[in-house]
Image (cartoon, rainbow, N blue to C red; front, side, top):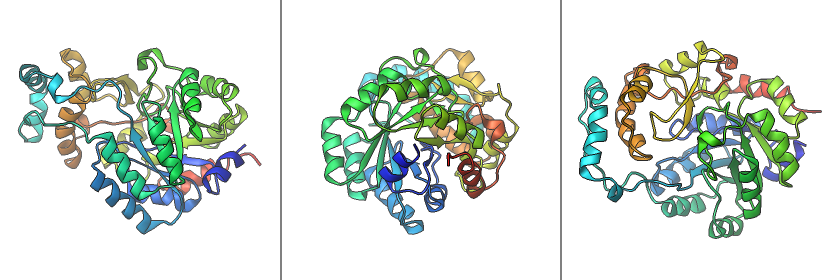
Length: 350
């Protein structure tokens, strides 16, 4: 079944790097592609100019296929939706974190995220092998533009119904991601809290329902997870946390230590950091925001916390940054991308 992905994308092995929105690394993306898999780079919050610069940097390190990942708009609050008084209330609740890292609380911005249209235009110009999307179904216009440029489109589903919607839109493959996975739950038909299906329950049901290749994500960190995913009908695997812990990733040492020392029950689903449900390792920031009861909607919360989280990350303040990790964190034992890749490859059929 792995041939369905290798033949489709033109890679040697059906192993896909999880696209870390906000934590992507050119070095890691290129390394996975060079090893024979599909490197992915998450473009959350990137302007068109930055997307083009990033794609060019990846190509400086590899000529092999890679994927660029975009978030599709989903019930997002705009600056005009948030009154100055509400913005001030949300910011006030987070003020202690700004004080702790030594920066001022920022004024309300004109926009929280670049327009999707700007990002897509840059992707079309960059012409990656694959455009992968989360939080929705690509429009007919997007599919047509991708087809015209020979760019494959991969959608992401957390339920069977979402997989059906993506196949109906014409995507080339579907990442079926279970609740074990790190980072944001990318549900779009129903609230994320109502779409919590485990990977190994989700995969066979999606495989039975759609004709396009299915890539398993969430709970895969070694050869055993790969074997299980393929036994359930997957045509490939997408792996995040195991690669995130390697030296080629963009995370700092505080985040890496948190992954290395996490337990099987050491991650939580929370909307504290971004305003959307996501899986990570709880810390003082998460606990304080949750106990405050004050939470801005996405992307306002994500934009506000992102200002002090960036400073905290630069200063190695692990208690004030987002420690994204999946439930397989304790299996993320390898130091390099090559070691992770070879471990995963050992589980491939044949």
